[in-house]
Structure formats: C-alpha cells, structure tokens
Amino acid sequence: MKKGTKIALWSSIPLILAIWFAGPRLGLWGDGDLKDAAFPVTKGQSPAQGQGQGPGGQQGGVLPVTGTIAKPSYLTNGIRSAGTLLANEEVDIVSKVSGKVTGVFFKEGSVVKKGALLVKIYDEDLQAQLQRAEIQEKMLSEKLERQRVLLAKDAVSREAFDQLQTDYNVILADINLLKVRIAETEVRAPFDGTIGFRFVSEGTYVQPSVKIAHLIDYSQMKLEFAIPEKYVSQQLMGKRISFNAQGYTDEFFATVYAIDYRVDEATRTIGLRARYDNRNKKLVPGMFADLVLITDEKNNAIQIPSEAIVPEMNEKRVWIYKKGKANLVPVVSGTRSETMVEILSGISVGDTVITSGLMQLRQNMPVRVNLTER
Image 1: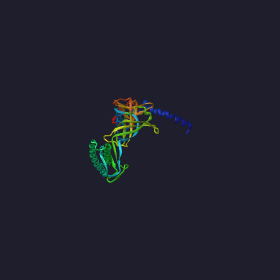
Image 2 (image 1 turned 135 degrees about the horizontal axis):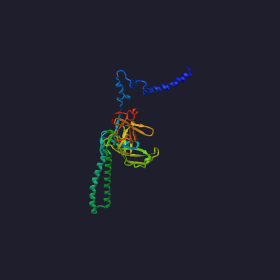
Image 3 (image 1 turned 90 degrees about the vertical axis):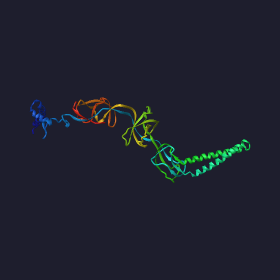
Image 4 (image 1 turned 120 degrees about the horizontal axis):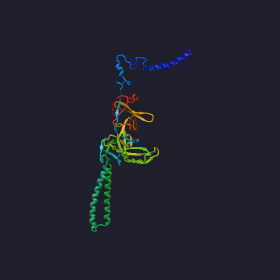
C-alpha cells in the first residue's frame, strides 16, 4: 500500500467516529434504529421490558442499596493498653508445723469461709502435755491460796510465797504455749474464697514447705496494666477502665484505685491497678484483658459503619438517602474503631446512611434502601 493511501485512511478515522456519534442528533438515521441501539431486546423479552432495565440490573432505574439509621450511641475515647486480671486475695495453704495429716475437711473447688477448718495435723502428744500442765496448774493454784493465807499471818516468808507465785505463772505460760501449738495443728482458711485442688491426703506427713491447697478470692478482681510515662501528669486516680476478655462479647468496666508512680526504665511506662466487681464470677485470675483507660465519654455520639465513608482528596463524604434519592454530603470524622467511625458533623440523628453500592451511586440517583441493624 502506498504511503499516501495509508495517510488518507488514518485521517478518515476521526471523521467516521464524529459522524457515528453525531448521527442520532442530526437525524441521519431513523428513530427505530435509535431505540434498537439504546434498548436491545433479547429473545423472549418485549421492547417495554428491555427499556425498564436500568444500569446495574435495577428495575426502573432505581438502584437497590443497603443502609442504616444514624442513632445516638455511647462512645469512649482514651488510652489503649493491655493488662492481666489478678485475684483480690490468693494464698498457698501450708501447715505451720510438721506432722501427719489426720483429717481433710474440704472439697476441691468448694467455697470456704474465713476460719473454716481445712486440715488437721496429729496433736495427741501436745494434748497429753496440755492435760498434764493443767493438772499442775490446779495443784499450784490451791497451794498458792493456802500460802497467801499463811503470808497474811506471817506464818510463811515472802520469799517462799514469791517463788510459788513464779512457779504458778510459769505453768500458765506453758499452758498458753501448748494451746498455741495445738491451734497450729489446725489449718484454717485465712479468708473467704474458693479452694482449688488438694495435694495431701490423710496419713501424709507434711512440713511447712508442703503445699496443701490453693485458696483464692476473686469476688473482686484487680486489673493490672501499664501506660506510657507521658500520661503521668494526668488525673488518673478514679478513672474508669473499659476492657474485654477472651471468651466474652461483653464489655466490662473497672475503676483505677492504685498507681505505681515509679517509671519502669526498660519500658518507660507507669503501672496502674483497677478494681472490678466480679461477684457474678464471670472472670477468673490470669486472664488477658484488652482495655481502654477512658479519658472522654460521650452519651450521644453518632457512629456509622466505616464502609460508608467515601474518602476524597482532603475530606470525607457520606451518601445519605433523602426523598428517594442519594445525596453525597461532606462529613467530619472523629474516633475510629475496628468497624465504626464517629461523625462530628455533616449528618444528624435519624439520617439514613447508605452502606453498599457506593461505586454505582451518582448525585440525586433514585435508590431503594434496605435497612440493616448495627
């Protein structure tokens, strides 16, 4: 093909395209061709059915979308951290004395009261010594009374009376000591709580280092965590803590009651403890907690799903449903969570926010909203 012919063919392409697009406006072909071109009809479909099908498959040009109603909600803002749940009180139960176990009086996993007898250690030798000392105390008491009468009549010396008084006091001291040693053979609960597994049986020889059981009180829980040192100047005492625990969808709340103001040099953090009322015993010690130290609370915050936000150059916009049509409005966002975004301005309570089909929407496009709960 000659060079001139090629140039002529390439030059004619823009002219052909211009005629193709301008033809319908200039009436270069009939209305029937226009209709067939604009609304192609497939086999088994009438022309009217073909014309009723709008973009994206919506009927009558109305785009089906999903949406949610903007409602006031409770929102917290604060310092995020992670912590560990601790028991209010816990202790390993051990014996103060060595000896053979003669009785176990608790069931594993049961609730015990303060002072309840848990384990009894052999004490028959101590009981015999106590009985002997009590007999001696009775004899010395009677002798002391006789000496007192004689001393009043100068029939006995003061020295002899004082020596008898001393012997009597020593016996009383021995009796008290034996009672204390006998009491130590009775292992009792130091506080109300739940007792765990037992590690001794009747006949076991225990020593002060032998663990008998573990007693724990978790009706109140301590939440221990740390925050960066830059927050040390803030008023932290009494602040509320919102936290979540593994295995629960509930949100729990605790209150800061203690602060360790010494900064950890390795992590540059300060330690805090918060108290949680666990009388329902949902949580157990040792659990991990994902928490927020609440610095700001809002009871009427507007939150919408994060997928409803349409980011643009330097602002954010949201599609709202109004009078059967979609309207794009600018918004100012605030706190963001995993699934929700706080809206500070741009929409009001009761507005219907569109959450799906955002890429197909155009300003004032007719839409049909299917509301979903959040």
